Image 1 (tube, rainbow over the protein chains, first blue to last red):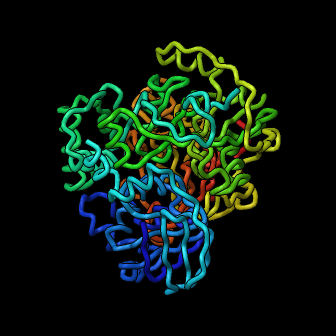
Image 2: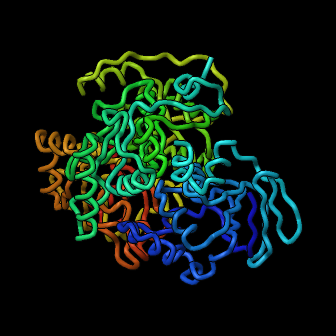
Image 3: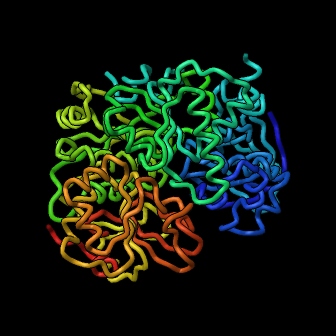
Length: 156
Length: 403
């Protein structure tokens, strides 16, 4: 499973409250979450997510179990999220909604060209290759299916 | 020989296992999404509705038409699917589950990050997202990666005005916000036995603030006694020799009243260092510190006095509220000038009932002080109940005296 796009760089300990604030949770309209993603961090950020790869610092997605955080990123058109470490519920949620997450220690600048290959286990930033921590077979299968819902449907 | 996680999940650390869950619950926020995912999965009948719970706690009672409609849909689904519902006013999911539902050795999943609270009983309890929960509703099981375990070795006894919440803050400060990511914490050592069940729930609650997937105590005489009070028979389970990834030592004798300052849970100062900080609101409640023992301690400190800043007290469950009424604790709290809100999460997640205005400062007994969490432009300090009580009376952050 591969992906590529320009980098949007974030710092360490990006929490799920910052990804999508609690005040936007009471709806089933996913476009609302995409529109307000990262609003409290940088109101212009949501407009730059389509086709991008988020390159975050350590402990990406810490805090709440709110799945709206990963749905917001997927709905906004994020291709994948790269970070040296993820909070575990965020990581699991990302797999479940079909948003590729790549655990790799990279650093970069906004706009850098990022590519990843989950099967081969690497991520590249401006041509420089870093090893990515492999996912379990089941996680890759869920991601490849596009998330846990389509995976479930394909297994039944 | 195994850690608690290895014993309960039945495999060594690092292994991936599929396990049936004993109890799975979601709240009004995550339940709506789980229901949506289940619909998309095309699942009509649930194999084990008796293992499932829906607990309305995040926005109770409903604050807008939208919220009310979402809750009504979920209420209807609970009725038609056979899932037991704890409706508005019943209390916070983790507290309701701690009142005689969760027992030692169980596998518990909740669609809320603070599900780790229930490890206080020696259960393996962890948080998942809504789609995970839908798959659990549909199948009765899920997969886990068995975590490596960090032992938090507690020695000595708490003294002075220090509380288990101060230990929880010290633990988060020691390990850091990602110090235990993907791991379990086991609270062990001679000091663990001296911590009450309410205190153990507080400590396990904040395990996730270190990134941990579970926080656990071994079931002992105190666990058995607490569960008996809630109509459940259980047996103590002695720890086995096992291989911990590492050990973090905390001597309870050294613990003093602490405060996490905005906007990080692991940025912790002695209450004395931030004493005098202006406050606009004090909030006592949440799945961290809204239990009876907490309310009773708060009442003991404010009894016969008046709070000097708006103070919101939210019991964690109906059972907590009922007991606080019966013992006079609630009357003391109301007489001191506090506002009491219905059992639930209150303003902790910034959704309703007590959110902060731009620039307002709150001292809260909750577990998170992320930027803007309780309202845009607000600042959140986290403390124990005793520190919150002393501060409510002073109108600024204050160091509690021994009561």
